[in-house]
Structure formats: structure tokens, C-alpha cells
Length: 257
Ligand SMILES: [Zn+2]
Image (tube, rainbow, N blue to C red; front, side, top):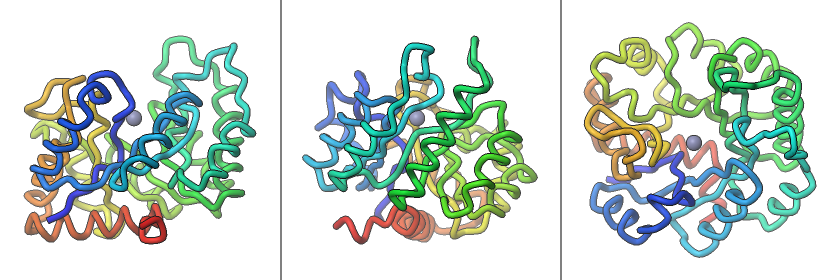
């Protein structure tokens, strides 16, 4: 059985400090592949460095809306230069976050559009972060019909998911799915077509039913897979195989090996 964590921050302190241990524990849980998204230029560079040093790690590059400060001038050129190394498998994580304290709409939407343009030019999929902005997000993604990607750490209901599925997007399920009280997202996991589901942890940030926020590791993708398998009445091996195939298809991983 091979599981794949499509979203973990191996560049960040708790995990980066003990990377060998984190990877070993992941492998013992059957987790053998990892996508490490950047959230600004520095973390994107670090993700690329990790990916070039370890064949089971893949990098994504992007500017997350929470790292978009008034001072940070988004420069697509710096990201384009990183992408020229042919290491990144996706542009991400990018998106809209209207749950932030002092967010402003215009810079967020402009930077998202610029990064979707970059994804178009580079023919790369995108990893989308979204909080409280699904309507505007949908309208922007619809403008970029040549781009597909994943809605990461999806926590919404089936109706909303339907809209993004209609654009060709995948839905990324994380630790939220392991919580018995997470009714909406569990309902969504029941209706998403089998070939559009991805698994992730967003480690170390999003916890699960049994792991506290800030303490999760890629090995916890096993609990997400078990929750999904239980909901869909699938075998665990089948769940692993199809979500692995989905990740491989969306991120063109075969070409990278
Ligand atoms: Zn993340």
C-alpha cells in the first residue's frame, strides 16, 4: 500500500527539524510521497531544494494570501525563474482568504490572477487555499479554464464542491474528515467522484480527531485514508491506490520519476 500526502509543510520548523524522523514515520504508515507547497518565495525555494534532494518529495511554488503583506510586491518573474528549474509540480499554495484579520480584496484577487496566469504559461496545476471566499474564487477560477488543480483542506458541503468539480478541480481531504462531528465535509466525501479525491494532512497545522493542531505529520494521512475508506465502504488498499493514481494524474508525477 502506498499513500501520498498531497499537502504538507516539511519546510516548517517542527517538521523540518526532524525531517528524517518525519519521513521514516511516514513510510512506516505507508506514506511514501509528499507534496510540499510554498507560501512565499523563501518557502518555495526551500520546497524546491527539498524536492531536488529527495525523490519522494515534490515541490509547489506560490504566494499564499496570508503572506501577502502591503510591502510584499508580488513578482511573477522570481517564481518563473524557480519554475525554470523544472522542479515544481504545481503552483501553490495560492488563493483567497477573507477570514484574515485585515485582508483587502483587490491585492488578493490580483495576485491570485497573476499566479493563475503563471500556471497557464507553465502548464502546471494549482493548489488552492480558500477561506470565506468561495463565490469570488469560483468566478476567478472559471476565467482560467485551461487550469486545473485541487481545493486543499476542503471543509465545505457537497453543493459548493459540485461547482468546483464542474470546473475540473479535485477536492483535497485532510484531518477534518476524521472528526465524527464534521458532518458537511463527510457528506462531501461521499459524493465526490472517486477519481477526484486527494488526501493530505497540511501538517503540521491542521490536526485530526486524535492529533492536536500544530502536531500533525504526513504519517497522519493514514487516518484520513481510513476515514474515507470507512465512509465509502472501500478497502484501505483500494483507497490508497485510487488516491495515489489521482495525485499522479493531477500533478503529472509519472513524468517526474
Ligand atoms: Zn498549507
